Amino acid sequence: MSPYLKQLTATKKNISAIDAVLRMENARYMPAPGRSNKRGAGVATFGRGQTAAIALETVRCHGQPMSSAECARAICEQHGLADEVQSQLAARVNTMFDRKAAAGVIRRIADADGRHMRWMAVSAPRQVA
Image 1 (spheres, rainbow, N blue to C red):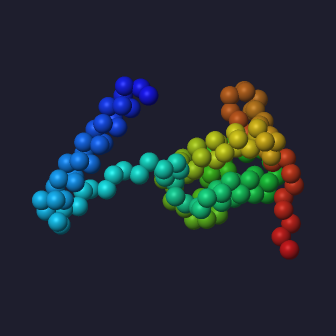
Image 2: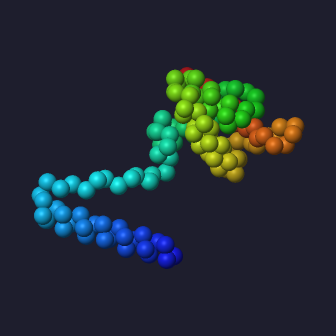
């Protein structure tokens, strides 16, 4: 364990001990809740796994290669999401597409300049019955 993590762990234990003493002195004392550090906490628009399904379906239905930003813009328009969410959603979509490309679900297609990445679905769109 790094020295930083050891120091951080010791500090957290000290804070917990101080909170315990304060609770013994004052029964109504409540320590402030800590910050949640959960993955994906920045964009809480869809449930677990739904972002991937919606993004893949958007790329499939588009029929042409599209960038992560274009995909995020389309999702925001379809679901009536605020514009502030679009850049965070684009980052999540890009990360998710990288993983899906490794699994063979989607393909990377570089633009002519080779700097910008576009994505194309491998499988055909689902038929809704």
